[in-house]
Image (cartoon, rainbow, N blue to C red; front, side, top):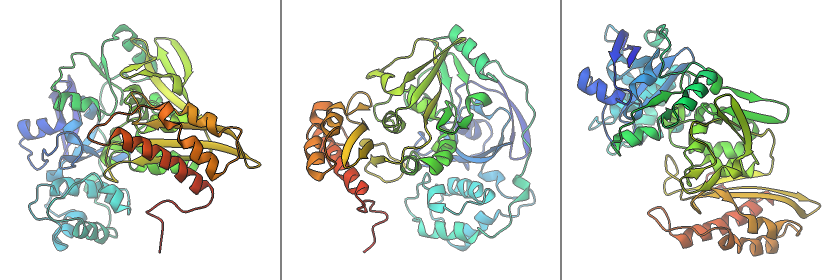
Length: 451
């Protein structure tokens, strides 16, 4: 596959294997070894690079970024962050001044993430750097360096126009082209952000013989906010989803803030998170609790279904061969929605349990309830027995406590490395109690509770 992009100021044309990662190509073909291989699955950030186009700059993990995804992009590795005359970027200078590096293995990734944050005026450094791990320096001097560089002017040498490129058959330009191609190639793999598919290649060593890349389908990335609903195109990244959710569903947004890392959210798409059918994906419980509508398409035929009906069994979804997820629609307002993600690490961790609640209370009585969990069964699904135990009863601690006992009727969780079955059931019960306490005005967020 012919791929054209700008690398550290130089136009590059590559005939690349469709699932060759940028990390491997940089190190093996170009000798640019500053970009490091750590986890090779998008967790550690040692491979972070700066990728830009007409929409701005993003920090992305090169280890799970396939070469065709760079077509028409601008890429800067750590070797290209400084100016052509050797002048250091402000974040590089600040890292030296504040002693932000020891062994140096992770430093190139930190520099790339910090340079992107600096170029976009970000000051939420904990979030910007949550996807970059450091085992020896610790984060204090690195955060000090990021803060010290805030006031420095933007590095104008990083402001480059993306190269003009031709359309490619493996990268459809719009949804119509994609739908027709996928209907004719139903066994193919669709690649959006590659945060999941990338691991099929780097960890499972799978050979993906036929692929199509969705990143050039601008119409599949649209987000539409109407008077009463929000529709996310399937290729909208989680960074783009997060920006909209903050204004309309703050609890859901706070959960998404912990979804992967900055680099992962910049690549991962909401459609991919739904379509892979994972029982521990973080979006489905929230979408089910919101009563979301899922949009699918096969060739020229479109259909809509409640998202709760999409997940049939483990590894099985209501999606025909050659049919793709095109988007999802949620209510614009849901003031009673709360989402809780339970994981061993606060940042960048897979959920042991993810629970989302939307309970309507009128005149002290529960009139409606939608409760959904991930990590509790082979699919994300509603807690029907718990909902039934709530609806029609007074909204009291006794009602909630009694209803919580029915989680064992709704779910038969498994024990694994993240949590035992007993722990998962106990957590589900406790999250319902937490939801009641929060709705009653009690402060429950340990990050906000003050002495």
